[in-house]
Image 1 (cartoon, helix red, strand yellow):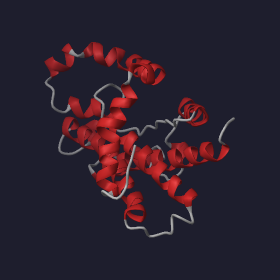
Image 2 (image 1 turned 180 degrees about the horizontal axis):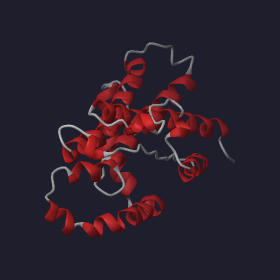
Image 3 (image 1 turned 60 degrees about the horizontal axis):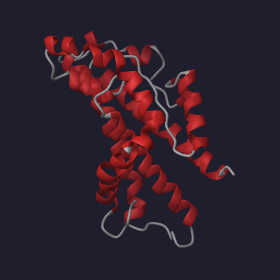
Length: 214
């Protein structure tokens, strides 16, 4: 049986989180001198401005499957960025994952300081905790240095042209590796490592010692 409530909650959380993430990219690019996000309509709170058809399908299918995943995109013309294309592109990239950690920290505030009576509102507690963990997941997953994730663009900032050339195979096959991780991540133990070593510890820091996460 499908948990309809959980599916709807996951879709809502992902739509908000992806929009927040991509808007952070767009605003940072704009601040650093690139007008491309504004000209292409990506300075928007409409989540579907930041997602293509495949991303939307993936969002709904992953929510139904029970884990929730999606991606967005923000067009950036890096040669317009300050202080230069390489550094500016890296700054724009890293802001996306940071924005999800910030959103997770904001979500943690009512949980950590008991701003609601969660004993009487268990559904609200579960929703906020789910939103918090999904945002940390998006941040951690996106920082993996594989194209087309943000982590790859951040890594490029610190590599020489020769090193980038030597890693051209990563750029070519990175999306395939991500697809394998997406399909077989549970069997490979990838998600266990991701949650136990990164996501749950970050959540524990945000929520405080009174919460048991994981």
